[in-house]
Length: 204
Image (tube, rainbow, N blue to C red; front, side):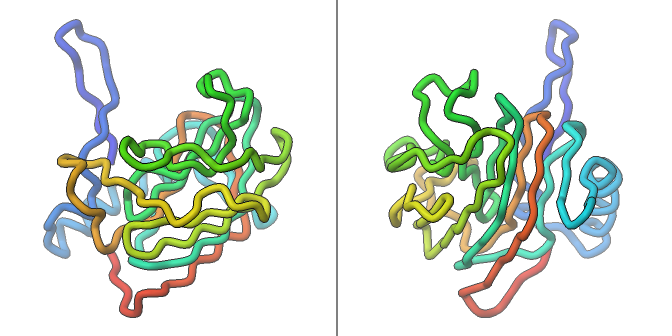
């Protein structure tokens, strides 16, 4: 969840709160918060000819359903200097960007675990297709570890995704949503398939 705060200098600044799925809300509170979020988010995410398109405004898109162990297939496409990512269990993130992105000084490819500090964060190889072309992720999340293939090439090999929220030394939550992240860029996603590998499903 993102909120807007005002600094002492009077400037507006967007900050990230602890995700909604961590809050202990009643059904009525959850429904009200969901309705409020939908009004802000959904107008900027539209489906056209089977493609989920984001217009560069508003907020990221998060699943209602929560997942523990799962497999995810998703096709994605960005423009030059586009920046995106996929949160696993509400935790950032599997990185999406271009090798020549202005925010990518090390010129690494997509698929890495961007926020890792103690465990590997960069992809093993650059497997991105040219900017403007479709790419395919196959992401498998088991326990706290992710294995990621990009366009059929292994880019993350059974690597721990570190917790980002609060105390980073704590383990990942057992379940959480999948989120398509944005940084205000035009994005496209399609062919999104999720298989729950952990049995019972939970919903937010």
